[in-house]
Image (tube, rainbow over all chains, first blue to last red; front, side, top):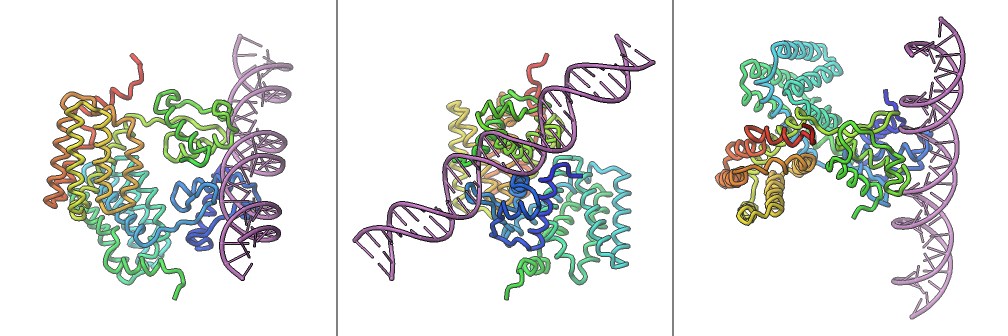
Length: 218
Length: 218
DNA sequence: CAATTATTTTTTGTATACAAAAATATTGAT
DNA sequence: ATCAATATTTTTGTATACAAAAAATAATTG
């Protein structure tokens, strides 16, 4: 799939940062990574640029590149923007969504519910993402869709934590239902409000998120 | 300011694309640009990556990089997202803005008005940007602020066209005033609605934008 | 012995070299 | 002449080489 060597290195490095192999503030050594991946410095440097653009890493001229994990404040800010972007999608979708797309959302929710019932967490995450992706698409704005996918991707590692939480899954599902209902009624404001609350970090979700940030300290 | 050679090349290329020197679909030749800038291919390729990330250029593996100017549809989509993002800023700012920031917005508007009176278009553009940047800042969300600035920057060349239009300037100014008034009243919904209409492409603005897209054809 | 300067070593940024893939030109057959 | 197959040239992607800047270490002086 990836034609360039640098691309696969970029996703590999991304994973290593998410895994915690490279922690915040750590410098990424070009030559070390080059021999680790059995390539020259060139593709490593290209991968660095990609990571820098996505914000996972900061490149300081003539100094090197350093891992930059979002802190609590930045993370809350990112989730707030995600919630607002999805709210915009919902409001636009309410007047633009097609009948077939509504049907597809219902089916996705059914599959999501089934995954919850069988405790298939992988299936749940997949269908959940499908639901949100469909919403982005139904905003009728391809640019907005791309921006949402970009931010969602960036928040993904922090999102998984949030749902490991008693009762949260069923609540999440009923929120999905409420969104579809609002969309069917063409009620954009309600759909926006529900999904804003669905995505926003608030209440116990806040504590879960904060807890997931602490590595293994204390 | 720019420590790396590649950075200054990136902004130079950006300018050349905005200028219309390199038009949509045109392939950017590495070796040609390298000798044109008196550097090797390496910094050119780094510059390409930056432009690709900002969406001005598309890099097709093993093929080359091609200029990708947004078409009418994508441009309208981008303006819609900009309008919604600014609406979010306004709504959040309504409850988060400080007294001193409100004062600053008033002063910016005064300077903007003065620029309109003296037909100082450069001054107008500067103060106008200042106004919007202040709004992003007062959302109280640094991440949102950055995202807004990023999109604003990308739309800048298309934005200038829009205001060259009889009566548009004074209307724009009264919209600014209405936004500040709503913020002072803490009325986020009104502030959001006003700025959404302020930024959105609608009515005559649509025709202006479409006209600005046609190069010199016909 | 501390602090500052000189020197060495690393490391980044850029240039050049080379290999593989794609585009283009050439040849040959019908 | 047209089309297919092959050879040639371009062009991209990667490796290596080199120069300059930064960091680390050693040396010198007060």
